[in-house]
Length: 368
Image (tube, rainbow, N blue to C red):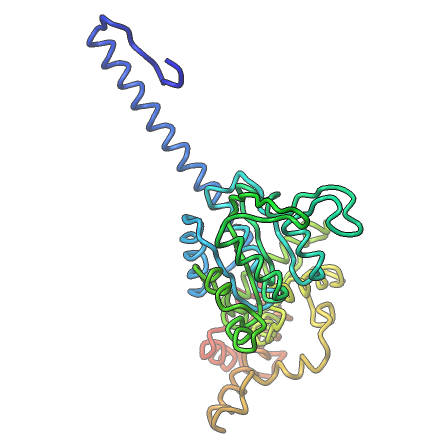
């Protein structure tokens, strides 16, 4: 009886047995549906902080799903500000370890001797200030995930100990002779080229291969510019709500400036720019001044990136297109989408303005 859904005693009636079986099957079906629903909810909550529909981001989503279904080590690579931390937490949240801790370790912020004691713990008396036993972060993450952020910065001695942990699934706290078994999934990230560090003997090759069982590469923002308008709107909504301010908007011509930026700081830089703009914009419309960009950025926006690498005729065509789109968009914004008024302001016939709008796909409805 213990642990059973139900039971039936002898002698039993055939109809009672069939009724009981039907109830058991129905309960099993409901449990499966409930588990599937919980999984879908978890996926939705996990990916809501990821903004992007570009093919490169779709590849990231697919890789996260694959990684979450295994217990293998994962190495997340990408530039600073691309979202490596989000990816690590998403893998944990979708895995079977999601109910257990996910412990993040920021490797560059801890000196070598402190990092070692933080990771593996220590016994009382192990060193001068070790006045009591202390559990390490590997023990704190037991049953869950430990996320080693920027692993390319750890020292050779810590690399060696980490390799031993990955091989033996055991840790040895400082000052202790007995090893302790740990059940931890390891996810690491880096913005460094670890293969280059291997060549210069700054990173162990065997540790690299232990970590890089599954590789997840997060693309820089400049390689997925189609996602920038979505990210801009997401951060506008987020910070207008958080800062309890009226809804802000970015005019189309200013969005062109966003699309032309290099975004060396990636999504993190974009987020900070939008946050500042929400605070500094005097009214509902975001301006270049509220973005805090230098005037040179405005002038640079008049010339598309990489223009000097093109043949003269092609470069001239791109500059003309960029000028027309920016100039006409500004005129339509000022006239709130009134084509006749915009044409008058530009010193053009209405028909001529409409012809330019059709040529470059400019819609007056966008500015109303």
